[in-house]
Length: 524
Image (cartoon, rainbow, N blue to C red; front, side, top):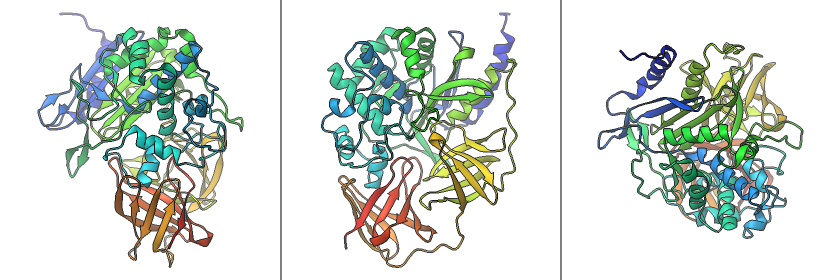
């Protein structure tokens, strides 16, 4: 009998247990890889790459990795900086002159660190009635960014995830390098590393051999996920476990761009307030049980990815799913937990605090933002603008978002909560009233120049949105407080909501998760 590494055998069985939910007949699936000391020591999968054809996920299955693309886009920018063709401190408007004057100088580094303040293009399109399942070109996205006249905040002062920033970085690479970003990535990164099954696919209609179909759960079964937006530097790569394992190894060895490139990708900067940004360049910094980590997640209709490295432990956990109900971030943390088992100095996971003081609907002290905290299978979940994200307990009794792109920590404060966000910003929160009602006189027509869209609110308090590319609705309106509403917008990924604050004169101030302060003026 061939001898077995018992530690590896235990790890394989723990990973198989994580894959068990995907072994049900007729289920899309998940692939898991673990890199340790430069070796892909584990590569397991379960479920189907194609429900229609009964094709199982295998070693060669390719998936859309969505925002895991962002670190590759940053690497491309940094390689051009090494070539002397640009600087990370260059103004993006100097490279893409058709961008509007947004009242501040925005650098490539602001974009790479999600500190630019530029509103997220996917959020903007949705506000104008166009969701991810609709067709949308790169020119459409650039035109929407071009309509903007304001920012979420002053560049460098805060963090807010923005797909617009990485879309613009991809365009900057193309204009400086004189070739499509996919070709630049292939020639400078992917081909030299032997990442032969990784490529950038600008169109979701492109035929990609071996690509798993993305599915979403619905009514006890599954449907094919609709997705029609063009993809670029913000999320256009397809890849697989083996290729991402190669990339993880390159981050250990500095094989592309040398150690200086790796250091530059990992480098973090403080905000203007002095607080340190958790987001480096296309990568989120964090810790798991006291072990420093760095990585990124990816989300696209029907696809979810987690790429999580523990550099000091020479470990990387890679999880990719074509099951829209999966949680690769949690699975990657559990794989990493199994891999570091027995490491001296591990911090024990904190116990959950009493959850009753946290649950419910909350409003920030300025009356502009609402959020919900719920419990699902014993796990606390926050919902901000409809986006669900898991909360993890901390040693001080607080709850914090498990992923770094959600800067969200809650502490009990008297009969309310204190919310700590990015840049050290703290706000008191109080419970939303249970008896809020919609205000009189709300029906009418409202227009937003920065979206090129208008909203019509009918007598039943439903919104119809008409934008440059689509008409959508009716969307439900819900009262949260006397001057704060929610507009609920169905979507491919989930039902989002927009906080709508009533302004003097009858205008509406609309804010989403990644696009804030858009004003709709009353026009009737």
